[in-house]
Every structure is written in structure tokens, then in C-alpha cells.
Length: 85
Image (tube, rainbow, N blue to C red; front, top):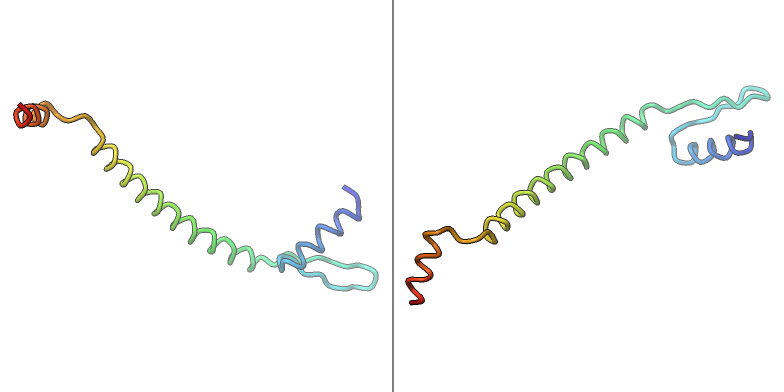
């Protein structure tokens, strides 16, 4: 990776607030802002829990729907035939 590409990537990370740069004479040290990653992790975990809950509810709905669409039991079939005949 070229120095120019690294610099461009660092600029994007800096604009996103993930790293910060300081000036030290000719050097431009880059510092990782770990607090931002902690906040991001918490945000991701919250939405992960919500997604898991929604998928759980979807599983329940699909299970109920499959139960309704399943073939009638022998007793149900006999009742239906008796009422029709």
C-alpha cells in the first residue's frame, strides 16, 4: 500500500472520529480513539439484541402458521366428512 493510500485512509478515519492526529514537528502521529469503538460496540450490541428478538418472534409466527397449514388430524377429518355427508 502506498504512503498516499495510507494517508487517504487515515484521513477518512479521522473524519469519522475514529482516530485523531497531532503535530510533532515534521511528524503527524495518529492516535486511535478507543472510546469511540466502545460506543460503537454498545450500539451494535443493542441492535443485535433487537434483531435477535425480532427473529425469535418471526420464528414463533412461522411455527404457528405451519401448524395451521398442517394436514388435519384423523379426528378432524372424520368430523369434516360426517358434517358433509
